Length: 117
Image (tube, rainbow, N blue to C red; front, top):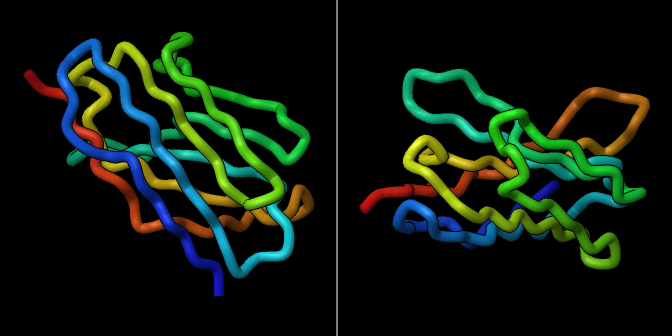
């Protein structure tokens, strides 16, 4: 059974920073680790992803403000978010894609990020 331990969400002022962590267990290999986000009334969007080889990808709205990283030894990914704006307010869902050959993903329970003064 795949299990997620997500942490790092919370309330931050505009211009501030947060760091999300996502530790995954119960899985033998992970091709891709990623975060998607969703706010009420909006579709879920990819924020950032990183492959086991270290190739990262970001949503256009990130515009250089976020950095994703991972430690393959402990199946943990990190999302450093800087210069946050109120538009970044959403639930951030960590997810993993076990294999490059299949599109299925496992999803965590989500972490709330609120950017407000």
